[in-house]
Image 1 (cartoon, rainbow, N blue to C red):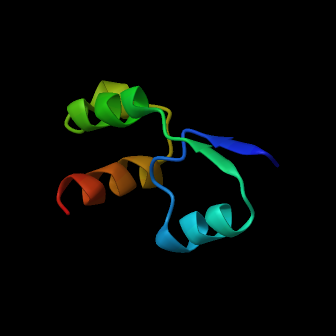
Image 2: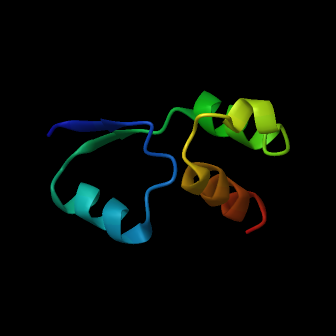
Length: 62
């Protein structure tokens, strides 16, 4: 693998592996901002994994 797209919520452990293996990271900021702007919008999250919303919520409150 040469690159990871949308790696906004990668853990510290994953980021270390990315660095060690020389993989490019493209953290698409729009995706992050869009999700954070819609944390309270149930319609936005319909059909998405509940864990995804929970992870963005934990980042917003960190």
